[in-house]
Amino acid sequence: MPAPLVLPRLSWGAADAPRHALLIHGLGSSGALMWRFGTALAGAGWCATAVDLRGHGTAPRALDYTIEAYAADVQGTTPDRRDGRSGWDLVIGHSLGGAAATVASADNPAWTRHLVLVDPGIHLTDADREAVSAGQEQAFADTSQEAVRAEHPHWHPQDIELKSLAAQQASRWAVEQTGAQNTPWDVREAAARLSVPTHVLGADPAVYSLFTGELAEQVRQNPVVTMSVVSGAGHSPHRDAPEETIRQLFAALG
Picture: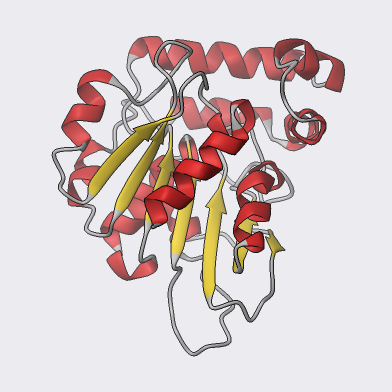
């Protein structure tokens, strides 16, 4: 794996909480935008830590934007525990973060005891890549809150504020290179090697989903993988339908 970068963090919940979760955002986003998961987990007695991925937010910039590089960074991110235990109790990865978390967990099963993937980017078709590229171009073309609100009028005001800021902070070159350096974009082999309990919070295909159809069926052949779909939510269920997304999260965790 590539040499890891040290990623900036922000946290919700007490540092001495008995359970620790890592939250990993998607392409063009930031750790702060995982706040719905962070606040919900903290309210349930967890300590939740979000990171800015390389090239995003205030994280270091680099030349390598392969999924393997992102995975090296998050695998090298460990909890600051005070109970003598090692590893995360839970890792939640959205989109690109889901791909990175899949590779990290497959390569090091001790990294986390449970994995939740939110409409993960496991394998992108040419049509998916074009849609993702168009979405990123739109986000960079106008980074104002007004533009985000016009595109997503139902989002919480904090999501609008933070999505605008994330577009301003992210390296456009890094986001473009993430697409260019991952051709093909395919971590299905790593998904087949997952050995920890893994749940996919899927987006609604009727709205837009990266993880559906034959791809979802193929990945779910791994017996550790389960899945639920957040009805009416697009690629970012935690912003489109936060209450239902959090309900499904806790149902999956038992």
